[in-house]
Length: 139
Image 1 (tube, rainbow, N blue to C red):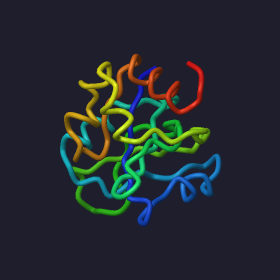
Image 2: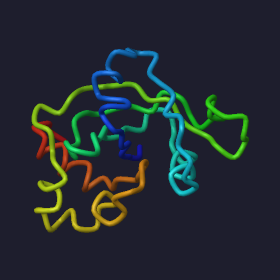
Image 3: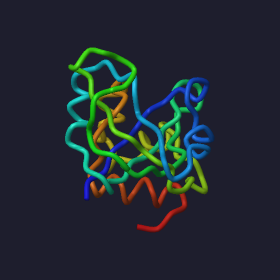
Image 4: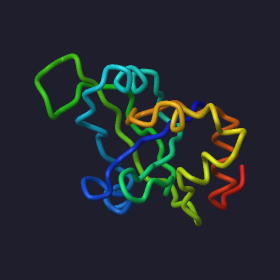
């Protein structure tokens, strides 16, 4: 299993919007960055990710699961763009802010800190465990 982070502006697509999609999940469409697209191409069904509210909140607010592997993005006819589908698994009891993450030396190399503009990012297992713990979840 691998771990990821999905960034979204809450005014465009929020955690509540994701939860409302239920078990079917939602296509993570509209990504037009080659690096983020390539990251999604690496994802497998069952992998987990953090759902991150960008802009004003700047916090990890929930856990999502990849429920469909990489496929063509339905929002474009351009075959260069792929996406995955994700479904909400559980909220973090305590959102973990970017400031919280930056305050932890062991998270200094996290893609969220180093490549803050990338909308879809890999997360290491150690980062995954620590951020979950910071958010009030075990393991």
